[in-house]
Length: 258
Image 1 (spheres, one colour):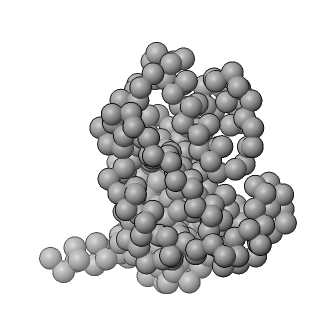
Image 2: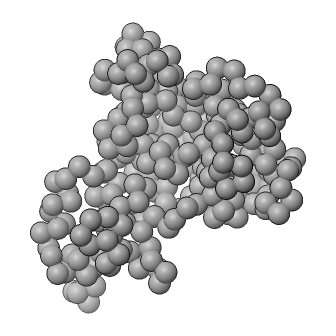
């Protein structure tokens, strides 16, 4: 099975200091770039997260503070990574809910403007859960009939995710070999921001997806309760959420001036 690609597709996996997309940082990133002609390029970076790695996280991925003490910070490699994935669609395992939001936060902290909203995003875990309801190791065993050795290392998980998707396409004839279709199939919702604090409703309007204004259009809330914007900007929300909220606010202000 060969992936039917219009753009290069980048499979990637992150190992991090924890699971909080607001505050945790990348300690390792691996990405496998698959070109439309089938050629592949693999890169792995160890990253100094500029914060201690909790022992509970090190116990999972095997990366300790000493391992990354002399490694570059994300800011130092951000432009290289951005150039490598420019014009590419993205794929991962649980990537829509974790890896992509974390990566977006790191780019924002580094001051690198990466508009990932224009990319198609294939989440192999969502496809797997919709079809079989299991984990990556089980998916690898089920689809590829192999044991996943060195699980929770970025390179092993990245390669396994790529192989699982290829096997999924072989196994399910009704699963389209098309990145746009796979991205649509592997999406649970229509997020405005990666954290899902705002989503598009059935009419394509941005609405809040949490709190007292859940289900209410963002533009209406910003007009009715201007202080809510300041509360969110000063609150414990991701940089991406704040950026998207600001984008909506500026759009609404510009509309009033016309």
